[in-house]
Image: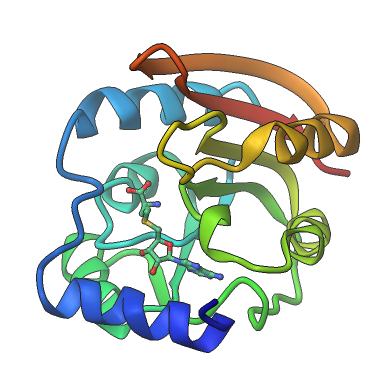
Length: 183
Ligand SMILES: C[S@@+](CC[C@H](N)C(=O)[O-])C[C@H]1O[C@@H](n2cnc3c(N)ncnc32)[C@H](O)[C@@H]1O
């Protein structure tokens, strides 16, 4: 099984080879749902974890005073600097990222799959922000989802504010956009 460093190297390679398939379909609908959740709570400062090439970042900078976008892939960060020059774009993993200030909202969309120690990652999200918007496949026949256990852990840890069911494929594959209170 790949270790964490290898997973991040593979993500960088995926971007270099142009094989990043995410952020290419339904982007405006996805962004609209996320922005609607963000707007339910104070959102002056936003941390976007795993920003990819900045398809959402460029919309976030329009609604917040300060957007910090982090990703483990240097190629993705180069792209987000072009897409959203107003954002602070940083090559960093969630695990290593630190901030002196707590963010109003954290967005962590389709990222937790790649992190091996998810409990630790969730604790880190808790430290860094007041509210969290997450999107992840929950049940997936292709085994890329977080699994129901993970979903329950998230439910237990944070107060749920609102859920937007996203889409359903082949009966089992569900993706939810969820806004939670962290602190
Ligand atoms: C499936 S893509 C999703 C991109 C974007 N958030 C979206 O929803 O379109 C996952 C992104 O998370 C990044 N990533 C994975 N693990 C990460 C970590 N621990 N910290 C920061 N970024 C991470 C990857 O490099 C990739 O850009």
